[in-house]
Length: 102
Image (cartoon, rainbow, N blue to C red):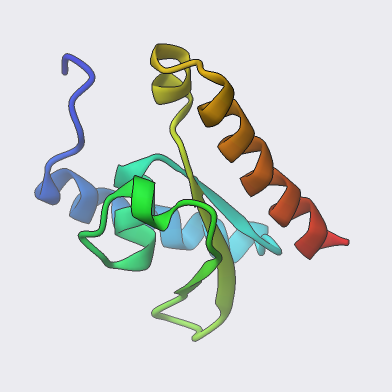
């Protein structure tokens, strides 16, 4: 509601579904769009401005498979803060993902 961040119990309810989808899809990399996604996947309270631009990893609790995660800005944030700096930072993040994928 009102574009708020998900509450902890909402995240906890969604977690098993996300993990199951990631097991099925088997991505080579995950791009976490925004703070809520990054904080959940990386199990941190650190904000997106500090997390973005640096690869981290998500470990599947069931299989132990490790997937690289690139935290970056949420599209809604970019729309509200569409500056040369935010565009450059997002592009740099995506270039790193492209580099990882070869």
